[in-house]
Length: 212
Image 1 (tube, rainbow, N blue to C red):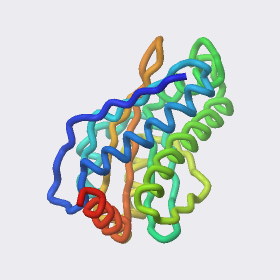
Image 2 (image 1 turned 120 degrees about the vertical axis):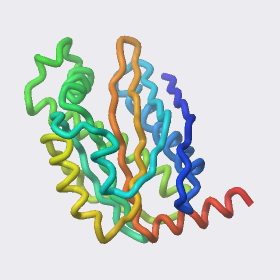
Image 3 (image 1 turned 180 degrees about the vertical axis):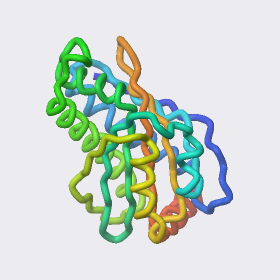
Image 4 (image 1 turned 120 degrees about the horizontal axis):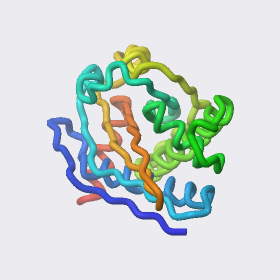
């Protein structure tokens, strides 16, 4: 099996965190996830991370303008020496495509709700777990994931509920626009990371020592 990851177009920010390093971590995580998914699907899967955006969490809904779009999301909290919350989001139609692929069903219309829920949970564990491994390896921080949670609602409804929890713990959203690619089509998703201020400081310190 082979996997590929494309990275480009880092949007710079006044934040101290080096976005080039963060994008590299995203690429490493995407590479790990692509390898795992290739083994599951028994065919080459690639994940491209073409751009990372950073912004205050409250600006995320207006950035994407997907306000009423039906969306499925997997949410995972990372706890330990530092904290980070991760949200993986797909439009509902894209989630059905994923479920069909993972259950080897020809049409997304043939996937029942239980099959879809199981497939999205598994994908979330693989993708978020891969990003977690890359983040832990780079920072040296012991990050322990809580069990993932899944939700289906409008894009803004999911985000509004999620962002309320972020107000006290994080002042930065890192957004990775992702493309899951296989021979017969692509699936788009968004991975959002909300690092705590402690984790932001750790990333900054590690980045400085890494480039020195």
